[in-house]
Length: 174
Image (cartoon, rainbow, N blue to C red):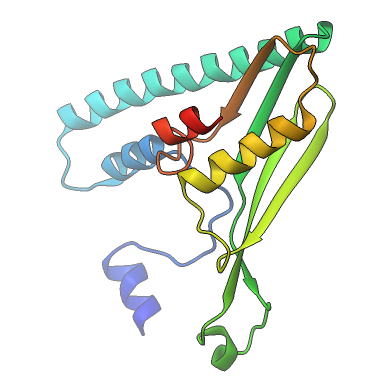
């Protein structure tokens, strides 16, 4: 009954999300799907969406160029990093077990775009959270253990998660 009401009355559906999406793109999509939105607002939203798409394309092109340049030099490095989806431990589908307290496991993946090597930093929630200090600590540890002393240029790419990546604590720690 709930599914029917949400699907028919509110135009909402239930399905798993396939990948992370950009908050800005999601906002544009919601505005454009709105039935009570004026044509002027829709036109302005389409213009802003086009600007945003152009920015995304420029960043992607810059990333590819950074990787290309780094592969041609011995003193350059390009790393991407992202906190993966949290994993319940143990994994169990029984609703009785699922809704009782589980231990959540976190995994930060750091990928070296030049050497094509992935590094995983895994911890459980009883040790630490998944905030800016933990991400910064993993990055610092990775650089301390894996940074070639000949590297003079390094570029880091991540998603735009403000609580984990785009803040002064991560910058100061690394």
